[in-house]
Amino acid sequence: MELTYQPFELQLKHTFTIAKFSRTSTPVMLLQIAHEGHIGYGEASMVPYMSETYETAFAFLKKVDTTQFKYPFNFAEISAYLDSLAPGNTAIKAGIDIALHDLEGKLQSKPCWELLGSNPAQMPVSSFTIGIDTPEIMRQKVQEAAEYKIIKVKLGRDNDKEIIQTIRSVTDVPLYVDANQGWTDLEKSLDLTYWLKEQGVLLIEQPMLKTDRDSNAWLTERSPLPIIADEAMQTFDDVERAKGAYHGINIKLMKSAGMYEANRMILKARELDLKVMIGCMTETSCAALAGAALAPQCDWADLDGPLLTSNNPFVLPEFVDGKWVLSGESGLGLHLL
Ligand code: MG
Image (cartoon, rainbow, N blue to C red; front, side, top):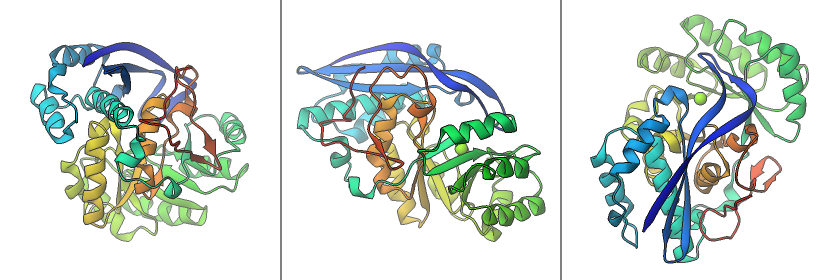
């Protein structure tokens, strides 16, 4: 089995601003694993706040011995092997895991969603994120986003109501709110959850600091809207800790270390009666299709990564009525441009 990879700077259509920072591009590592005439494609999206870089990815990939990837793949063993090389590094581990899933699907002539037990008919609508900007540009972005059925809005600064009012001046679609840990005052936050509910908001992601479990739990107990852990939710071990502090969790492949771990997290969350959102980073069609393969098992999907980028090297998957369409093709169903 041959592993190859190349760095790729993924450009964003708009400067992306959330509560804590702004950026215009994302470092991505594109991976291929070749075996018996088939190629599995993978992707690691290394957003700056997750602390992985091209350097850490190259350093990790140098340690990977592809003789460990014996077919048929035992993903539990592979996951343990990758963790034995170095802790963390979840994005680059996800890149390898996604490539192996794509390869497995091609070797078995089955789509990844089928291998993972997903039903494409259960695909949830995917939300489309509007970053923080001037009211004029936000209105323009919302108007450009007319084909999306749910819009996700980044809040967590001092003008949250103003931002919602700006969006409501141009659209009535349901909204998700992501505070990105930006809320601090408990009573004010609770008042805001009631106001947001009246504004047609359906859920709130990570209202308070990820380290402040008590404040998030206080709000979860009282909020009329579901409160979802995102920054507080990284890997499998965090799922159990979310119980009691959040109504649900946001799973992202770049945090979980890939599809195998994400699938385990979904099953664990169901066992604990937690709601599940599947989210993404700024990603190409590759990681988005990997997320979409699991999305039918989730309550909510936030898989807009490739829609926010301007130099996706892969064909954009079919997107109909606000949902990704899972094809019957083997593997991820990914095509090079
Ligand atoms: Mg979030």
